[in-house]
Length: 504
Image 1 (spheres, helix red, strand yellow):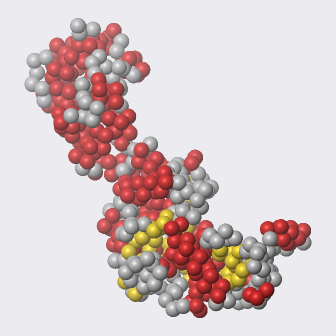
Image 2 (tube, helix red, strand yellow; image 1 turned 90 degrees about the horizontal axis):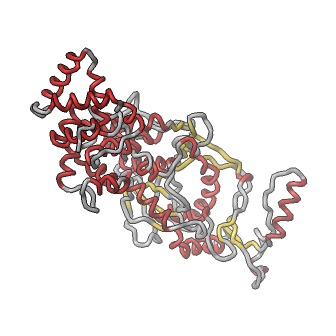
Image 3 (cartoon, one colour; image 1 turned 180 degrees about the vertical axis):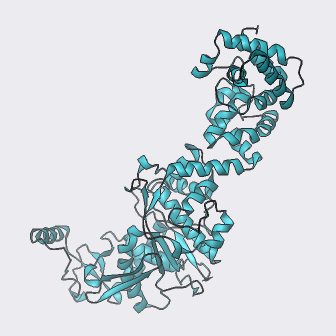
């Protein structure tokens, strides 16, 4: 097995890639859909392992399924990885572009006697498979072409190329997560490595690409354990053909399940990474931290920075059992990171969301199509310290900021309308009269309203509730005195007048 200190060559067919020293990992998604949360965690563990050992982390797009691979999916994968800070250290490798190289190795194996041309027709294979089913025995292909003399190969019949799998003994993998795993070689069939149209299969392409990219550690989901034993057949065969072929270290990480223990699905929150950002409004550092803790831990640490993760991460600490995804915990973690985030950064993110999802409000505030102007940005950043402490995600943060730019008269939600009864509007008129001559600072305004509440023998909340409805159009907002200061004297009194019936 390769170790962290091994020097690994990228191979003579790596497209000019320079030899690398030390650990080389790779994340190799198929671009047939979005980057799902399990794939993102696999990428994270590969990135962390390489960083921890001072190695190299590579990306490979396994786009050999031409019918299902799409440019949109490729773009979504790169977008999600870059958002999480998991872009590759080098330009990505596209597997389909290397098909000639894959076919070259397949023919090399045939010439060396480690693979063979199989001329069995689909009908013949179906008949043999059905016969095995009827006899209630597992189907193991015994092709008469395995040991046929090449001189007997028909010149005009289509064929596939099959690897010659060993028929005796056993193969053991010392997996860095799962431990020692042994499979009897008789369980591995002579699988196809080159189709009848000359295109390589996944099993062949993966092995060659890992070799040519100099991959030392294959870290992937444990649904690939069986693939590892099949891929080792090609590796061992190539070791007998030419020098430089190494068996990588394998680390098969458990899949992610829902909180109920069932396979993770959309009902558990298994969305694309882009949806966690765009729909749920999460920050990348929160998703990074949460994925890190899904199946791996460092003592009791819950909040782990990127630098700490690199320092502490060890693939051997990944648990063997399936991790359980809990969306509620992820949202709670996001709230922490939102409160810790830089105000200028959050201001830019909220401004972008306001312009994209709330164009009407931005336009109503007299702003241009580009979004908030300099004054709006300045106001939003001033408000950010009091806005972010009450928000759990970017959606809530953006919603809480809308009152700053709303056009008069405000559109009130149903709960706010319920507060502005005749008594509520009368209170607003009295509040406006009381605040008219006050110095417009949070402390002074609080003192004035508390005194007014005491004089009327009511709680401060009885004043704050209709006031909040008039100022924001909702029943939730930052502290009412912060709202008054942020809106300023003129705007605050104008909004109060609109709802109290005193406005023109």
